[in-house]
Length: 604
Image (cartoon, rainbow, N blue to C red):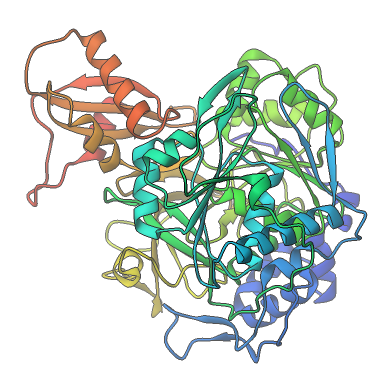
């Protein structure tokens, strides 16, 4: 970390911030005191935040927080009735709420009224197709206007939305469909990337989706199954729809996150979860009315729904670029869309720095960046800050089961690249060593309750995953998360990766066991262990696979190529194997658990 901060907030930046506004409201002059107040006076903090965000209620909550059933299963906004989508349309009808650009085309805009009409037409289409409140629908699409509208329409109609990343293989799509069983899945005929057309409808068919609605983006005709239909046939001409009002704990979205077992965890988001996303966007990314927010992502990852809610509830404008965020056209899009907050994963920045492809563009409209998904490198983050004339990077780390971040930065504090300046407002955590003693470096345990955190899982026992056998701290119940952090002398934090068998690759959380289950199918491998290696200077993790040999056939180069292809075809092409290491046998504990940390340490 630099001895001096790379960016310091001016008095003007501080006084224009949303944090300062709420500090003034509560006569608090110091940010650290404000964070402590948000934890000590949690109910007051969330009551004020809900009001400031303008969350719309059909029936007002009786209490902000009810914990009669224990802090493990809190009930937020108790006895309220609402539909969170109503809170996404609070701007002026003619306000621009989406700026988007298809590859090779010009920038386009969508007003709030036009988006709302599209959402209502889709919601009516869902009802007219025979679906009922409570039926699930699926989305396997890139982040497009249609994807955003379908997502909001499903929630508005009371139909939980199952989100699946468009990069997933057929196997991974099938796993998610089997867990959730959506009645209809929305997809495209193909994915268009850099002049290439990649099949998408075919993958969803092969994954055995019950019924599919296809958005055609190619001029090439495809043959649909009898139970499937095209977008134009599905969408209703009726643009009036009244949202379905529900309990705050009703499921609105099913997202997936890999844990330490092979199958992904199916995590329900409820009507209260987006309030956490919007709160973080309001306080930490400092989103203001009509700010333009760009974060290249997908609805299959939590940052997709986060982007929708954090932007729209704060009356902002989403900037959606339909291609990869790597080349010149993306840089021009950021400039021409007048993006004010640009979200990244560190892998993007590493490429931008190496290629220098963004240096020709005017990004002066950017007020701050935000980085998540991977451990970042300070040198690369300083480079990113300079691309917009020295603007801060809001480091942001959380989880799908949190609905946002637990550790982050702010625009009212000094910015040291690749560090977090604060625990997220409204929540707290503690770092414990292997003896469960509070430590400067240790496993991060959340201190519940925190609005936005999950209370259930569709395919696991929620208590066993997050609370069973966790230590207590100062007589407080703790919730397991799996990240490791270090607290610095100045009170800031740095990320140190994971303590469990999960890893972040390209901003995607994946289980070691998922990687190993694919690799172990190769004939020359007896057993394997996948580990994430963090570079010494910081930055995105590298995937290294250790293996014990089953047979001596194939060269080292051929073996590495086979491993790469297996992971690409069966899991995700974004998971890149850096190295394949042959060892005599995998190191194991007395209980036969693979000692991945030992392998990681030996490699480093």
